[in-house]
Length: 464
Image: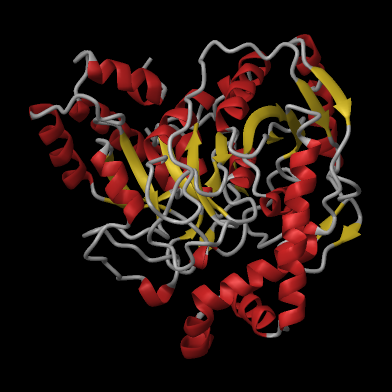
């Protein structure tokens, strides 16, 4: 097995035991990027000389206790990296090179990670299809004619194709879970505050979170453990108990939802998930068809997301309207049209939805549902406007299996679970109790091992 095929946990152990060097690991992943990235377009800015120099320095002066010592990573192109081009997927920032790292990057460097470059994202992270005018579209390693999803599509595709052992991503309405489902990898949307972000422009806003993308649940837990730094900022949750790698899932009570109370779901997704559902019972889990009442979350998400776009991009649209993606202009206009009464009602309803989900999960250990309502769609298609004969009104409607969960502030993970007959990945979303990343990761790891879908890797032979 080559180094790029090994898990992050394995690489961490090999480096710690001095069986391989950081330079060897970084070189293996740089070689893999050179071999397959031209067809996938997941990593859009690469700094190989800088990464190798940092790896060599790590080998000369190893620092015990650094959780990710010598492990390579690439950063989502929405996050500032000092001296490395950061475009936000926008042509206005195509040549932008920040002079300082964002907190997330500083944290990763502090724990020993080696930054190789940047992963692709839609313009300003808007939408769950990864394309932009600067770098173009990111393609799905399982079918290059299909999208990798988004907005962390570059991260998910790079991890799936073996170009990275893991990656960071962010999730507002599914931007971690959707590409994980499409690319057959693991991605965790943590409880808000589990990964604190002192750089964000609203420290009290819980809708957008940072989380890990990885090939295995154990690797996702490793990266989350590195990012979950206790900080004195609002919503920060502090330290958390790490998952037990040999925890048993027998006896867990899982609520199973096909459509989260009436959402349109592509039949290929429903069939794929239902065919693998018996594995949960074989593990000794009690599986009950049940689902919380979350339909009001659609209005809450629309309102609070639109308000956030005004806060983050209102000035950008006002000053440079003609150079900003049409959907972002629409998002900002939706926010500017909000009246105070509607905002207040959405904020109150968010609290009710949280209480309802918390009460629901007192009866169940987790809620299981589709991570995406559709399988990966053609890369040339901007967004899904129809599912199972149901017309959708906006470019975010097809993400409601994720957006409804985001509003509740509960942690959720997408894990590899099934495939359609034509070989497209279908992820299972598991929602856990508030603040209980440990329990959610342990359950996900048990299911992952039994299902085995994560062991099916994309066929991307190196260029001759």
